[in-house]
Image 1 (tube, helix red, strand yellow):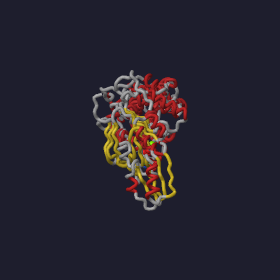
Image 2 (tube, helix red, strand yellow):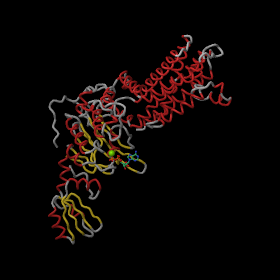
Image 3 (cartoon, chains in turn green, yellow):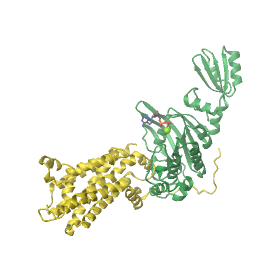
Image 4 (cartoon, each protein chain N blue to C red):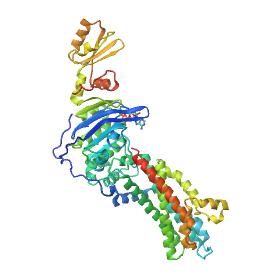
Length: 306
Length: 266
Ligand SMILES: Nc1ncnc2c1ncn2[C@@H]1O[C@H](COP(=O)(O)OP(=O)(O)O)[C@@H](O)[C@H]1O
Ligand SMILES: [Mg+2]
């Protein structure tokens, strides 16, 4: 590949639905070959962003570039393909017929048999789509997305509504797909999926990126602890400069400090201030995710993963 | 993180191009035609029912003659051929409603297939099914003893078939208006009423005057009159021609407008 433009470049992307701002000035750059999880709770604006990224929705403001051009060009050239939450299938066709039909829409499709094999549905090729389980239909959508051998694959909550077995089979199919150079963007609200599959996690909340880093960096968020104490009129600036402190938040009479070094914060609070009721809680990745995506502890997006 | 990079996979393709004709191809057309022919409901209403109508209502008129001496059975056969063609093309056009309701159209927007190629495929499929409707009706008529001059078979058949293009547009129009999976359940009775006003079931001359006057403005009237003209020797009927042109324009432009709204409604 001689391509030097980023796989995806979103700048100041904004989309509102009436009073709801679904995507709020979101910017994101994904380089070719990256495997990125777009992680956030329901309603964070993931699908709306993905729709704009694929040219299915027009942004109110901001720009979308896919491999340096508009998304429609990338779709037409088969450079981008997607497995979406919505997007139905024809019930009267079989699995193989669906893939065969869709193959004709591409200039240079991969062979149907190969695609069925890679999506793990070769054994149900002759089954009518209407008789396939949700997981099987999702793997069929994945097969359709594999047809152009896209440079960028977008997966939007691909395992929603699947049972445990369906999820396992789907991820098996995705993993088996050799990703040699393929850029992947996975929108999900499952932390474990992001953790297991992505090299980089972009956390979104209320249409904004609240954290962006390698999986390891995001995981480091979990290394910290939260020191909580009752301290009316806490001096936030003084706390923020203590070594290891990541974020400080005052909530009523309480102060919450997220830190890598809870001992120092605790010592400071107990010896230099009138703090009482002090408690220290450790956090795991789940907590970090919840904290960042629900706003229970304000995070500054810049330092995380920077 | 345990995603292994396979050493055997080829490098990413570099020379990419969009599909020729926006993805419109004979292969896709073939699949689409096979799909409609596999649909029992479609076959029932477009091929079998009009044929049965002929056997039920046409055959008893055997031996009767039109004022110009041509058989009444031929008049009924041609009318029912128009009916068969209009049901066929409407249902094939209205298939976009089902595909929109199922979300297939959205799926298609993630492929290089151009929306215009998709619609072209639907129109051609509709016309193939419409031709089949005319041919089956004529075959049943011929087998049941309808004898008319060869040029009447040809011109009446062509008029019934080509005139049904207006209903392919009608089907598309409805399909883009109402994304419902079962749109034909609603359209069946509508088509029957339109056929009634078009004089396909009962000659309009036998109906009240007011009914006849209204009928001239309904969309089946034109194609019905034009298809029967070679048989009745009525010559070129400008009212019928105007009716056909008018409704083709209305449904065609309506469908095009809704189609554009649908594809730009990104
Ligand atoms: N078509 C729409 N009309 C109105 N509101 C919408 C529409 N699509 C999304 N929203 C709203 O935008 C917000 C973001 O939605 P979405 O992008 O689907 O989030 P996610 O995919 O992260 O769950 C939600 O509050 C949702 O209710
Ligand atoms: Mg979503």
